[in-house]
Length: 504
Image (cartoon, rainbow, N blue to C red; front, side, top):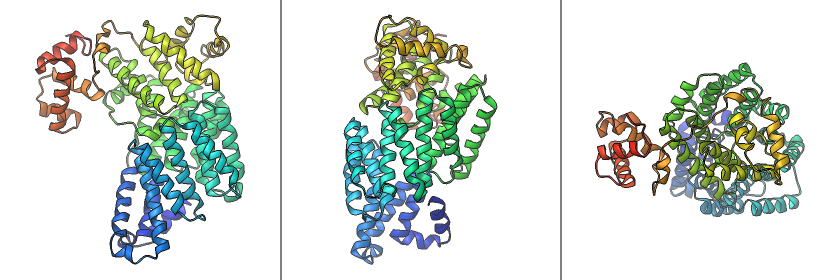
């Protein structure tokens, strides 16, 4: 009961909470529900410090073991967030073993992160098999452990490109949760159903379930609430209902301010998509050109990935510099999606990459892979939403292949799609030599080299990008090395020559 925990915690003096390991762990979980991961890590470290002192010595052996299990659970999630999947797997095992059998929800969380750490290692099928085997042995299919196991299976099904299995699992979650009424789990079930409906182009189904999950936003995990609202905006944009899309964006911003006091990156991404769809492309481009946040591993498994939105928006800009930046982002994301066997995300990235490399052989290679991966699970929507540009590319695929029927389904739906004519399209570079660099420039390095040709000192460049002087200097050195030059102006000249910067 997230709200109950928050109310109860507010009744206690702050200094009391900060001095008791058990109470501070409750604060960890409340903060976790809000998806404030830096604070979660900080509070968890404070709990560990307390366990090493007098507060820890005063605990019974049993209570200490329980709190140590909770700490392992929290550190497991933190390890996953840092991309340390192997460490997350071991910590999840420790947490599951040490937490009491009656602590079903947290033990379920341990199995959840264990499964997703395995998925990050490319072992999604093995993870699903272990979860199914565990579920079959559980006597109570409606407790927190069973429901969290089902939740992990459903989300894994989405990533492995099997939305039909995800839908079956989510409906089972809702049926099993009728007795315990765990709102957090019910919201996740509706989210899974919404995503499954959206990717298979059953937009009415998607809208219904995204609405259900969004309505539970103050009882749900904030990540689920935010992603469900993002899905709802996507449905409204897909059906041309811009007024409802705007209302949902406003609701999402209001939710962020109430939960965190700032607008979340996911919300900014959704808002930028809304702006682009409603003719405010300049504002959307401003967000895309300045956004520079690392990818959180778990967001790779979610509906709204800001870095993918960023790449798609950059491809709609007239500047070749932005196209190169978009391709770099797509390359990085494709590597992450492939290494974790994330079929759903690979389809989206490969389809977008096909547009990014129009008129080149890379385009057809990417498109064929996207079509073959999408066909198995009927993932038509990632192709449909790219509109007429992808329509044109699909018509160039050779006929007579096993994917003909699937491609025909996609082609039949695109012309009727609202806004199909104005869907994002990449402009092919007339100077593609930048792609031939031994090591491509990162997104940040492209931003730095763009500012290098302005009358700005390194200190001023650092200020413009909100980074330290030392970081700006390090980027400059990396740029010189990658471009094979030894001075700032040589770097600018080389960047212009290979198309990283438009010539003046």
